[in-house]
Length: 124
Image 1 (cartoon, helix red, strand yellow):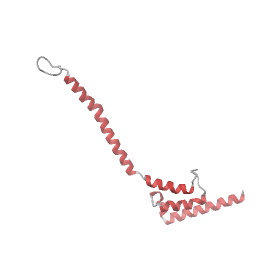
Image 2 (cartoon, rainbow, N blue to C red):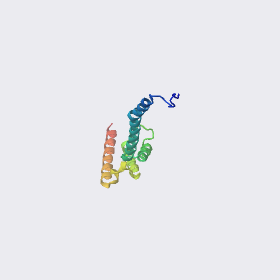
Image 3 (spheres, rainbow, N blue to C red):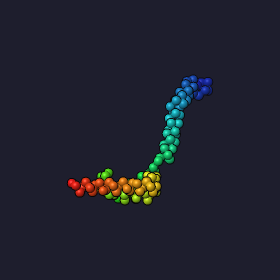
Image 4 (cartoon, rainbow, N blue to C red):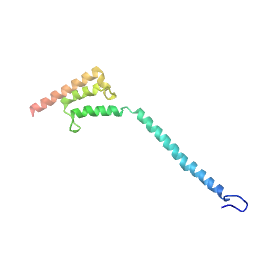
């Protein structure tokens, strides 16, 4: 409404503006800043991940070749083939498998485990 003096508004307009500025300063601005910081940190976490989604999917493909029923278990005799498949993907999951001495030691341990398994099954 317009006052008879020709002034529009109310004498309490300053209270409305002060409350609006206070609410924006106390609630809205911190929420905006927190949301921006959260999005930034989330994007940095994705970049710092040790294993990318592509590498995980590659490992999953290798695993499913040797464990098609998704039991989460694998016979010892299948491990060497699975490690060779993971090694060929050239991901960070196979970084130790690329070193020949480590791969040969692992292969030797698998062969020993196979021999023990055959020995146990031969006795049983």
